Image (cartoon, rainbow, N blue to C red; front, top):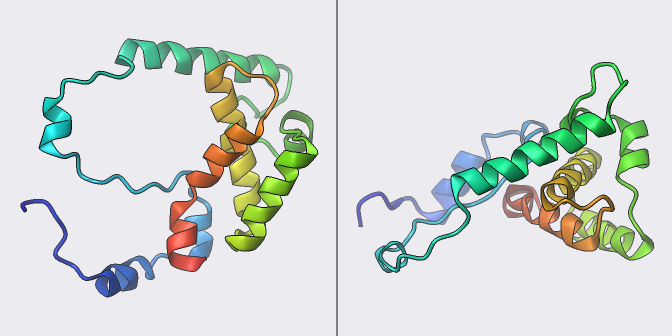
Length: 152
């Protein structure tokens, strides 16, 4: 089928192995996007419109600007340091256990831990939620797929 990779899993692994772990660690979202099948395209299902997504993104950015008002050089979740992570990404014990499980079992680095919390904070902002929940953290963990596939 046109567009499909003819590479073997080993060839793909070797190619991806060229990306160093520390470099990949600095990328917040890693996801695999499979090709969309024709029957799915032809089904006519619709999701959120671009305008709806834009509205959610603008609202999330406004939450972030309000959260960091008065903090020099800090306007978005991606720029949070350890002090801000503790203040704005507090999680309950059950969510800590989930994150601990991911860190241990999936062999995530300390940098990945911070990235997961920042992404979870953004997911919560997009959902209009002030507290971080296990659902937000779980979703953020899912966006570390290359960590698990290559280095885990």
